[in-house]
Amino acid sequence: MLQLTGMRMEDLPEVMALERAGHDFPWSEGVMASCLSRHHRARLLYEDQVLVGFAILQEVLDEATLLNMVIAATARRRGHGRWLLERLIAEVDAGVSVIHLEVRPSNHAAIALYESMGFNEYARRPRYYPRRGGGYEDAMLMALTLASDTMRL
Ligand SMILES: CC(C)(COP(=O)(O)OP(=O)(O)OC[C@H]1O[C@@H](n2cnc3c(N)ncnc32)[C@H](O)[C@@H]1OP(=O)(O)O)[C@@H](O)C(=O)NCCC(=O)NCCS
Image 1 (cartoon, rainbow, N blue to C red):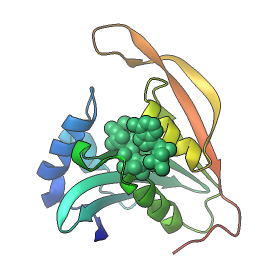
Image 2 (image 1 turned 135 degrees about the vertical axis):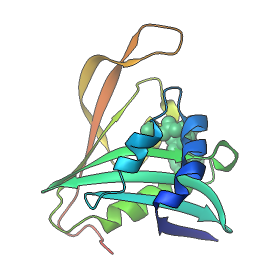
Image 3 (image 1 turned 45 degrees about the vertical axis):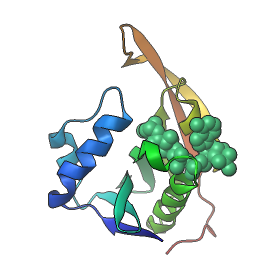
Image 4 (image 1 turned 90 degrees about the vertical axis):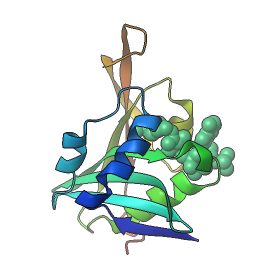
């Protein structure tokens, strides 16, 4: 069974283990802790009481930004990422009309997930991300426009 909970300070060690396994350039624990403010929706995904993922969304006025998202490697391709993102989007305030995100063009799994949920690319930030082994990679900027009748919780 899948369950969603709010991230708390005491969850950080487990969250950071997922973060370090999920990204070549993981956030520091300090950055992760800063996402526990009231402007962020930091959510943990549990499957049968085991932490299998997290996602963090920031809301500012009528815009939201998906800042981070990881599903444990052992739990991927089973719809968990989609479920988590759908729930997070359903939670945003009614006044939010667009959700932004940035992703590496080489992250085919994440792009496929975002596109399948209706996100579209609208710009690139050249040479934005450091690349493992040296050099830089663009950031792909994507957005999802929320219709006024998008289902909210
Ligand atoms: C991106 C990520 C969150 C996807 O999570 P997931 O639980 O595996 O995704 P889902 O099972 O919900 O997949 C939903 C859809 O996304 C697409 N998708 C997901 N992984 C894919 C892959 N490896 N290759 C191609 N398409 C993929 C598919 O369209 C999939 O639907 P389908 O399985 O019916 O074909 C996960 O791969 C991950 O944590 N990656 C490392 C961290 C990361 O890159 N985070 C995102 C950027 S911050």
